[in-house]
Image 1: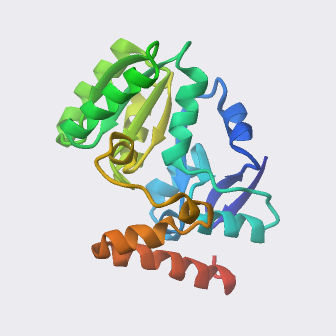
Image 2 (image 1 turned 180 degrees about the vertical axis):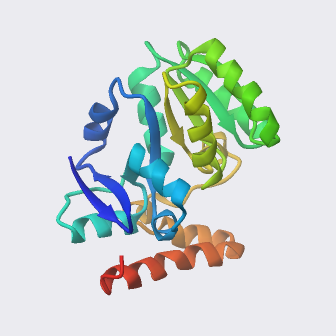
Length: 231
């Protein structure tokens, strides 16, 4: 495992999912999925969060940037990795879920309990709450003491929330998941496997949701800046 700095952000490169699983064993903090959109941002708090914790290459652009800097890395998608964490830990660790609509979250919890009968889910909370409710959520997390907290709310909101929760309960590993509950629950379809392997999930999302075009252009802006060595 090697590290590189990309646009002021520390990025870890891993050569396998197993290497990342081994790396986080026993660790507490935040797992932050790095993609061109996040790496393009210049927001002091987000940069601080990434640099204080573990940023891993979720997007193909992040992998490309690491390799340009001589760091061996593969793409590890958060949509897959959170389930790898569960598969490796559900018999001995506990979990808390935050994010998505209530129906999506309940479907996610139901499927997890069906697929992993021995899983211990300490609690769950949908992603629709006001900022003043965060302390209440933090109190519940502190009271239940989960080992892992999964937060699926989109970026950078989920990173800011995880950072705030970690400040109140630092005995868990927090991971941001974006729209992973939607996919896992069947609420939304994920890109075909061949597009996943080719690193073209962004293209599938753009085709499925044309309104995302502004977000997806960040990949091309990032690559342009990267190739011109402006980041």
